[in-house]
Length: 250
Image (tube, rainbow, N blue to C red):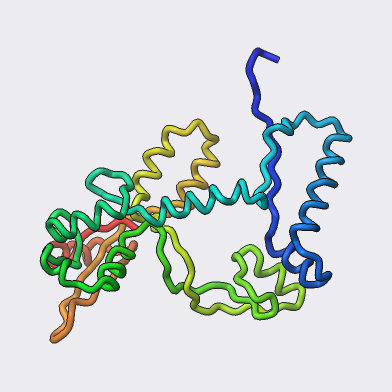
């Protein structure tokens, strides 16, 4: 109405747990039921005369769509966060740096020289690089539902337990994002967004950056024991500040 072009697309997101369960109950492939549901919703919306731009329709079940989500994952997996430049870089640059000067240019507890890096096996090098990748595999507690054969999000637990399913916490290997590595960068860039304050606050909480202390206690005959806390009382911090203690961001 004021001369601006307004982007008003429509997006369909599916292939989640409800679609999977319906397929198991009816023995109908989820692609068939998903396409039928999309067609029904599209017809109803058009009958209502809503002004969506159907030339910009997005379907997350379309291979032409999720091939790009897979591509994005590979970019993240093959990257590491360089705190010196405050940005992500290809993992190959870190491998080259290790071969050239080891960890001399990095602030890390796992120190080694270039010669030591070259003497490591390919698996040892792979495992070290994995500790820097932005996407990595870790074993963490999840909400496992044996009856559904899948992991549930926290907000899904009550729904499925009310339906009679049993959900238990168990450790499981899964892909994680190394958000803490670039938490400060995310917060800085968020300040430039013209978003409502409530939305920005949700983003800050999701990033989860907080400050505290990492305390290294000496242990006879073994490596020092590391303990982290966000609630260090001042008198205690005053006594141990210095060797064996440092601030950290997590």
